[in-house]
Length: 93
Image (cartoon, rainbow, N blue to C red; front, top):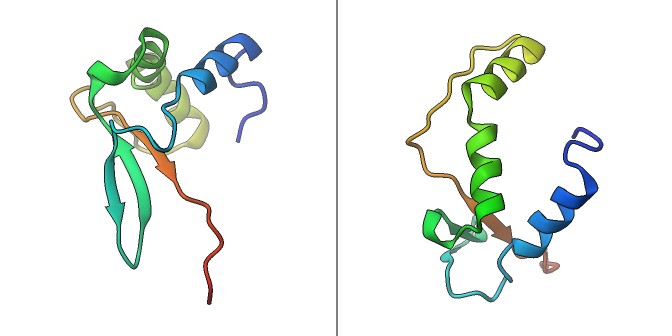
């Protein structure tokens, strides 16, 4: 985790634009191993979210992370970007 990675304004707008957990835009995975919802339909992303995903997948950012982490990392601009939501209900053991 990187503190203050986004400005407060951008972080707040991203949080506000994140779809509600009960939204019908998600693809649902619910089985013994996972209970999550995903959305990779770019048409559902607001302009700010789309731009943030685009920048995080840019050659500039990928190179920056690659140089910091000292790992081989490549951009995949055609791979789908995802919103991901998990249920955090307490489960019985």
